[in-house]
Length: 148
Image 1 (tube, rainbow, N blue to C red):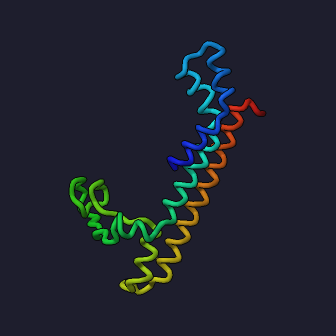
Image 2: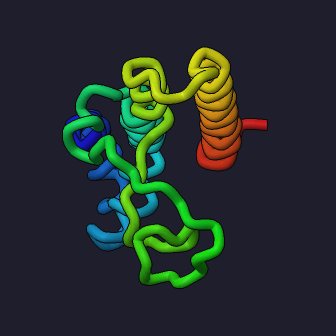
Image 3: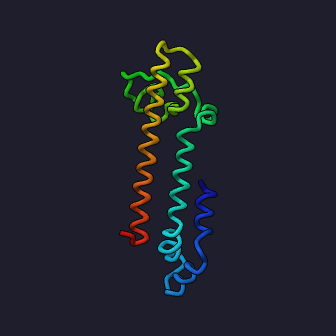
């Protein structure tokens, strides 16, 4: 993501930067009002691509986020307890890791239904995320380029 954003900022032509400075605005205002709006489509693309990889990367998350989320105690509402459903300190797992875990461990009798449901939820979230990103990108493009 960083590389994509950096490339987007570098690809803004130097004449646009010079034009902003020639109009008498400061360097900061040039960056804020000339460079960033011109580079915004590439920045949004980098964010969307990075987010898409986060949704789908299961193998890397197994080792970094862990695969042993503790069972939730729905009667425990202490936000500091790791078994509480409202605790920010408890371990968690992504949907991709959950699908892999359900299919590989075989501890759930209806593992196929659970993994298919989890996969459907994951696909729906990815679809909503991509459609939202596309909608926001179109709105930003229309606003920043004065397109109707």
